[in-house]
Image 1 (cartoon, rainbow, N blue to C red):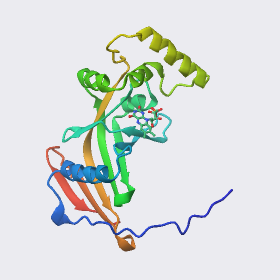
Image 2 (cartoon, rainbow, N blue to C red):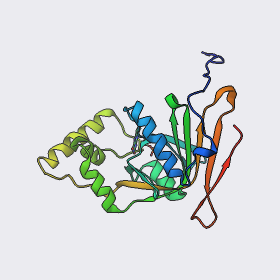
Image 3 (cartoon, rainbow, N blue to C red):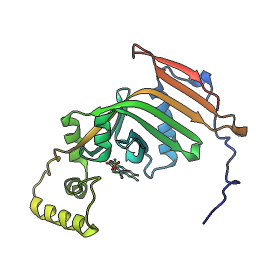
Length: 216
Ligand SMILES: Cc1cc2nc3c(=O)[nH]c(=O)nc-3n(C[C@H](O)[C@H](O)[C@H](O)COP(=O)(O)O)c2cc1C
């Protein structure tokens, strides 16, 4: 089977990213773009691609949900025994990628991941729907399991065990990571492949941002 997609392309013309619009802090531009996207796309608007260094040398990409962001960093939640968590433990250098097709925009972030305080994970866990909380207890994320039935049986057993307990506790092996950015690249599609690419990179002291334009 072979499919040729040579003619699948768009001419990007919905925006521009010129130096005159750029804020000092990259998080301010991220926030403006994030809100633009949320305003036109409500479904999974907070999903992002997280790329880690695989223990086998292959880069590993997967979607996760962005749950908090600020100038401190970008937070998502996961199982601390999962492959991604082990990979982060091995090397905290990660990339995040956001692609907002309807706006012809991409944001690429490089940063250093670390676990959030337990209190942050517990506070977020409390807000999750009960079945998602039980799901977090159920799934030995990233391990090989024998069947779908295994998961469903585990889920049912845990549901029975928790019964009508009011607050399901946050599992020990579940929580958040925060990615503290060291660089951002903002990409805005433009006609004739003359796209705008602006990078903010942390200065050596780590307190300010250097800003430059890259060729598309
Ligand atoms: C839209 C979307 C959102 C997801 N959000 C999360 C998330 O927030 N946390 C998570 O652990 N997995 C999330 N997943 C599942 C991950 O992509 C992945 O399959 C899982 O975390 C196991 O990854 P790992 O084996 O590399 O650790 C999401 C998947 C999709 C498609």
